[in-house]
Length: 137
Image 1 (cartoon, rainbow, N blue to C red):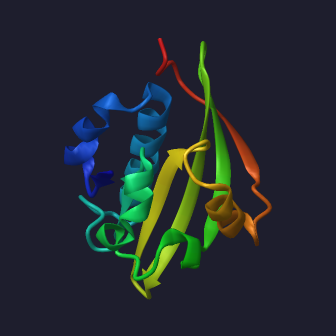
Image 2: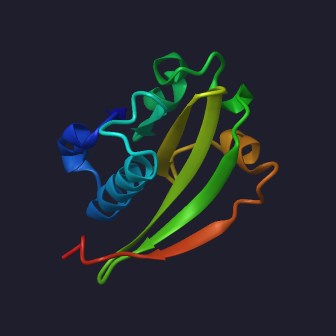
């Protein structure tokens, strides 16, 4: 599990597919710029999950229940297209209280069918195709 609270955490994404890392960094930068913040600690954080153990560790993410039982606000399948590669990520947002939330990214093939059903029960697994800059060169 990789937790991103600020740009200082971006090196933690070094082992993540370059398209995913680029997208997560841009999303975090955009959020901090939108709220005029130097880090996200006032409003939440971002997680990249890359194992079932990460999914199971809901307490570390601040969720009081497993992801399969938690209510998410948004869920999308992000199709990140680079020059050579295309990857698919699941993106979900959980609002934990009136001023703090988390964004969660994970490879599309990571979660169980049960979790996918829960994530997309109100969102129909919308796909968002995003043309990426040359992160996969």
